Length: 470
Image (cartoon, rainbow, N blue to C red; front, side, top):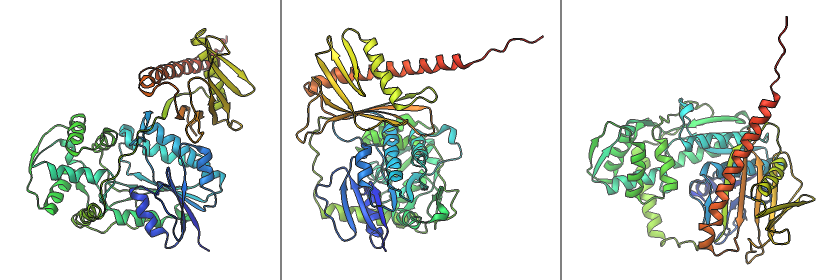
């Protein structure tokens, strides 16, 4: 009997390469936000899934024995995104963990980054990778994490940025962070490492570092890449780290978006060398050979197809805010507290009323409903999701989809998320982005402050002052 594995991020750079190998032994459920232009084949079934929706993720994972999590949110989707990549990744990981638990999936395989020894001062990117690892395991499904440094392949993020710098800069000023050591690995060997741990019970709830045969500085990688390309480059050492300045010139030279460049460059100040390697075969392909292969594959891809079509403008909103929560407060407590507080904060301009578990937000008078929100399912301690199904401020999409307002508590933490998903405003888009969208951020900041003060008051109330004894 062939086992079934569900892959989140199947259409991405790593996911597509993993699938090509896994389908020889497993049936695959390939998840993608859009299955347009995706065709099922022998042992591969595509399922459309918005990973920001728990309901969709739970349905999409049905029938799987194992799961693989190969996604990150450094590049937001279309529309308006008011959220950090850390908060988006945390929410997606929480949905995926819950979905795997609901479907009795045996194991989650996760691709992360090598965590350096100085873990107290991690970059935002590596902190997020570590948090996602924790959240994926927060529902009790065993997680096996493969931690890699720079993966050398024709797509992705890190290596293409390095290759573009070498191609486009005849003179390179190298800050001190280019002397930091890292542990590159060929894409093909990283893929084999991921495949090798599927179903390996001895590696459940373990993390394993992987790297190639050479530990190298970024300067050495630049020199060797230039050598493979046949480029002569003048390199001038600059004895200061200048991480912030480096982010700007890397973005300017490569043309890569800020959302990708900033987190990656910030991580380059850390030494990322494989340490905990037990359980997985390490890479054997030398760096130069890996670079040659990556550049050859890149040329094949360029000659094999035209430019990617630009995605049409989307007029949907995603907004996620994170804040601390008082101890033992549920997601439904967060929701009720928010609506009640909002009604007090902006009265009489805004009035909020509750009927059963549903809420209405009205302007000036109760009959002028701006938003109607219906609780989608029975709320749990960790999650309460409301469908935005009516009101003057929202409109239905062509396929009658509505937005959602979601409250959740992250597992094993005292942090909460408030998130808006797929919201389509009734106001003209240009006007909404300049007014209501900005007002929402202010309101969320004030609510986070309000919740923090509630927590501080609760802590003070819990303190017991003992009477002096004689």
